[in-house]
Image (cartoon, rainbow, N blue to C red; front, side, top):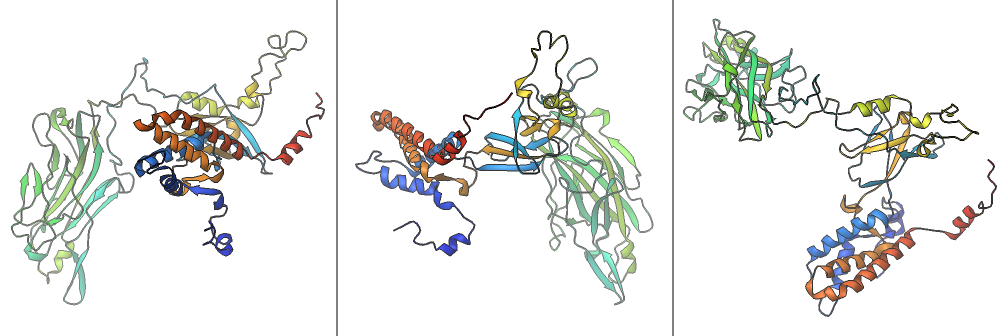
Length: 519
């Protein structure tokens, strides 16, 4: 049956897969290889499909580099940074060029005379410096909105109507990062005669994989006592276990402390939303619990671990800074009591500072991750635009000979180099604002739709797979030399076919071979 028996002209011309007939999927290549080359009385008596699939993908990748057509390209407008990100499936480039207003490509040439090296931070004496005092975590001063990587308990507002006329908020809380501080606002929990708020917290994961110890300090403010409230309590600590957003417990008289961290048992809480299990806090070098605590009525008080006591994190790659807040009230209002709408506590924390004095951090660079070499290169006039005629005693000393010209710079299209470490292409200053096209090679293994072979190279795929499979079995070693020659011949034939030379096009170009070029 023909390949197109199940495809109508309308389906093809109105579809999104135009030109697909020239390709064969890798899945079909593997299936057909298993049928034709594997089995009794065949070259490969027995072979698993996994082995064939592996060698098929290797064949596709290798042929993609210099045999199959490279059809991938990206176009961007070069920003002021003079940088372009390498594509996610980039292997190598074939050409970079910029286009003019007529859409004509102008090739950009690579430069070998500059780069973007790793710029090592040094002190005034030239000694290498290490980032031992950098504050861990993100947005620890809460100057930005409260967003990821910070996490918090989600809140559900509860309201109740009193006397059928007024509606009051109770049993609610909010966590907001405003006014450069993290604020906890907690209402009294009215049900079940509890006179305490919910237990709530916010937390963030910290990467301590290259650190031995860390230190902790912060500035906190807690609600003071009044007629209706006893006040608020605020804690911050370092834990190796993160809270979860759905473990929120009410606080009643049964709360207790474990390692100075509030947690709650199941007594009296069977009908409540959940039970907060204790977070396992780390210890300091002196054996104390790794946390700071503010009692009711403290205002803008900075606290730190005493005597520069350090927290041992050498056994962990990730720890969590956990902030907890509760409110304790003098009364437990009833549903008819209109005062409970004003029963809330407000605690806040700011300027959290977590540092590592014993960090094993590697050499560091500046915050922009760029070197002075690159900064100087992009800020000066491109060498390709240097129109020096060299007419001086050094470069033009005798009968007009011209010395000193660098042939690779004898053009005005610009230049580039590729920073493989950071995955970026850097351009010369005269490329800024231009539309640049990157033609590049991929290994064709990025997605399922990309794993296809041009039919002019299909036989080369079979021969490549056959040689690779035979080379991996002991009983077919005598066939390997012959199969290798067949593979090489098939690849050479595929290259010739895919080179796409047309006699008429070649003739048109050669008609100008005798054209006189005036100097």
